[in-house]
Image 1: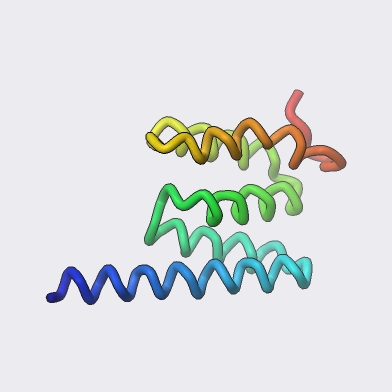
Image 2 (image 1 turned 135 degrees about the vertical axis):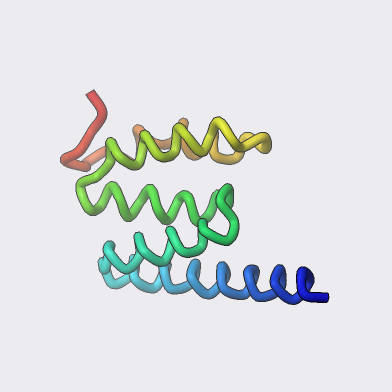
Length: 102
């Protein structure tokens, strides 16, 4: 019963943090968006939506290279291939960013 309650709580927390990340991004509050997405990833480390939020926030904060490194590590653990899709989209996300890969 405890494990089920914990899983339910973790899902609710992750969803709330994901919503917070989206709201913060809509207001261009990238620090809050980053922290919220990282919080969601604490509950579900391979959630592709939370990863996309995290990557976008890092890019907006001028930390695109860091986003690429962190995403590369996560891709190695993801057997669904969803994070690899996000990784292949990274150059497009970095367009217009001052922190492009070289």
